[in-house]
Image (cartoon, rainbow, N blue to C red; front, side, top):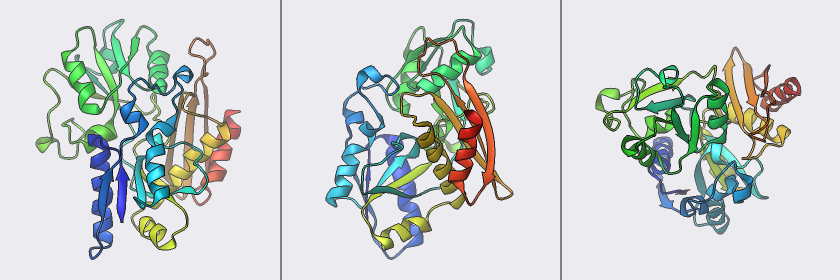
Amino acid sequence: MTLGTRGSALALAQTEMVLQALRSARPDDAFFHTVIQTTGDLRQDLRLGHPESGADKGVWTRELEAALAGGTVQAAVHSAKDVPTDLPDGFHLAGCLPRAAVDDMLVSRHPGGFDALPPGATVATSSVRRARQLRHHRADLRIIEMRGNVPTRLRKLAEADGLDAVVLARAGLDRLGYATPWHPAAATATPLPAGLHAALLPVTQFLPAAAQGIVTFEVFGEDPARDALLQAITDPATWRALQAERAFLRLLQAGCHTPIGLLTTESADELHLQAIVFPDDAASTEPPRTATARGPAHAPEAAAAALFTALA
């Protein structure tokens, strides 16, 4: 089996996780990967969450889907939060690895975390969701856009005058081996650039993106043996959460331009979902809509429907 992946350091690290899981499940089989550049990698001018740019989540997946349809690769490895809610005909998700930490992390020139940012601090992010949640809690902040992979953003923060902090996914920092107090092997991890401090943004205030922290596998066509292998390395609880969160996005008819925070947890055979949905218009004075709901773990779509009803 050959896996298709983007070429960023994070994409390669996540693909290596999948390869290790496959090799553990089938030690006698051969597994490989190939790097495929996507439009999102080549076009740094495209801006998710900004309709005028013409960008959607497909900029990260279309070239990988072409390789799947052409048989060059048998599965594509994605950060699940980057996968469009509705896939083209013939494509489907066939499983996922266990979910990593869902928190967002503030990396700042100032110790003390979010509340210690000075008045009027400049914070960079490429995520409309993060920008809206930051402003929701600190209207004084100046939010600017920053593109690039994780190492690039950290370097820009360390070198740029007038920039106080960036917001990144903890899962990405962990998978790339950056040392923070929460990294499972912090003592041997790569230090952050000198002068930078990491602090978690509490998930109770900063809900993650739908499917944040999940690595998923996209496939094309029918192949029961392939899908059974991918299901063998799939974490059931994460798969249920992924199904619930993607179902909620479909019900909401939300695209990459809608700022949404969404999280599913599971306990006692029950899914617990919570969401925050901001108006599409950044100039709107309407408060965000929030909702929570519960549903049986064996029926993720029903849990999503309950959350949608509670939000409406």
